[in-house]
Image: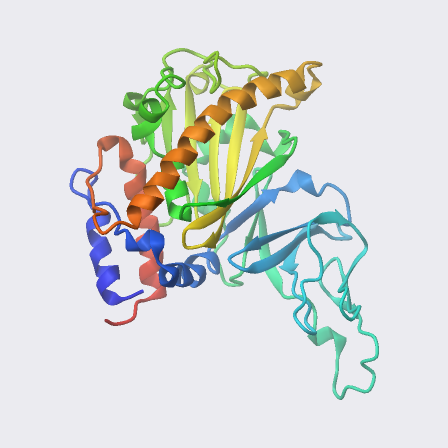
Length: 386
């Protein structure tokens, strides 16, 4: 990133009443994404999914983040581990999808790796001088679990994740997320917008009952709040969205459909929270469910988005759970379709020569906090002239 561009970002980190939106170049440039790949995605904690997806020893799944294929596995000690999926012989990706196995065998030349990434076998290498299997294990990533989510980090020197999320912890404590249930996820591939457009839209209170006018009147933009001031050592940006009545729901009834999380206070039953844990996780709460988007850039103007819902375990015991889930999802899809149309058109506008550096409403305070998170890390990674 050039010194010129980095210096111009100062105007996006001041008070919300004075700040300018980020330059359009940050959303369209392949060079910027290449910079972010190193400055953010190779340095920050990346959410890759829920720990319950791999409950048993030998369970594993793969995910690709900025062209880095990763295996997430539960090893023989029952621990979650993460490693590169790139064979250390000729760089073939050794597995895709998900499964359960005792080892990972590269299909190309049958180099065989343990669940912990150690190289166990390498056929016909006995004539290779000074070859030691211990030197060719799969590269390891740092792993940390937070409220049932798995985070990985390519940076072996990264500070622990959990302390950087503490400002949000009181707002999710009563959901007991470690013991909640995610029935599964689905993925939208090749969505035509930059990853930051996705993050901004998810946490944008300003559009809540404007774009979603007829389906979100119970959670109006005017009831957005930003309850905890931003701090430089935080890795979470969040806001609350107040309801006009208790037990609101993002569906056609505007009421909860599933079992309400039983430990929630009355205050918690009259609001949602919307949180960003950049650069990969968007997470939200409602009285009867939580929801998350895992955002994975596939180019400067495209992303894959994995979407999941989380419920109290009692909700799945309801014999009508599937029918209720269909009703709930139908309501969510209205939001999704409206947001997809809006974010695609925002991305299109960002390519225009007339793309502005606009001004913010007070209801967009979360964007300023996100800008500060971004710029802090851009600066830490450095800039290049001119």
